[in-house]
Length: 212
Picture 1: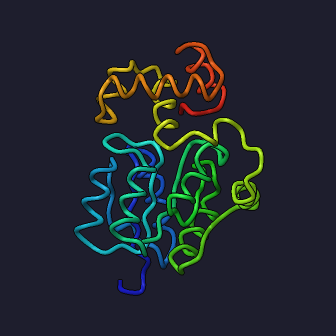
Picture 2: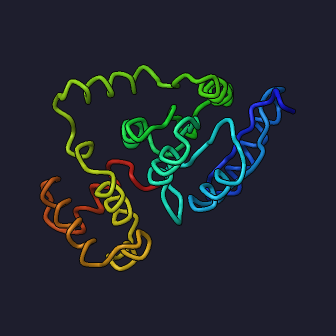
């Protein structure tokens, strides 16, 4: 058992966790040693025992994946975290890598790619596609980036929640901030994205694949 790579799967969909567990069960060196269905539980499990790799979903309740990632890297800087998402790379991948992720995979990735990614990050390397590498190079170079990529992580999360149909009050409750603060973020989003109202924010979020 000691030579196996112990993996924790954090995803709020039980069927996804089951599918990932099935994929990893077919390997000799990988073992799913625990599961979490939200960010808070993932952090608690990280504090209770040692892990070789975290598989972390981007969109989870009780602390989203990016926030959870930041806290994990603060407390366990050497823990490899591989982000998984229904969203394409251009929505969250750069943010995840900048926050400390060892790699980013979409849930449409082939099982063999997932296994290879886990092994690579467990060995201390990064797992970054050529497309993502190009995007990171653009960020480093400071080139012209789409308005969406220029949003802060919190602004991006508020936009995602608004696009999913949540009211400002519901967004405030989920992020544990005041409604007034959410309103401020909404105003910033409208200005930065050149939009006029909440309906346009919702349409923008849907068009850019922010809602699963």
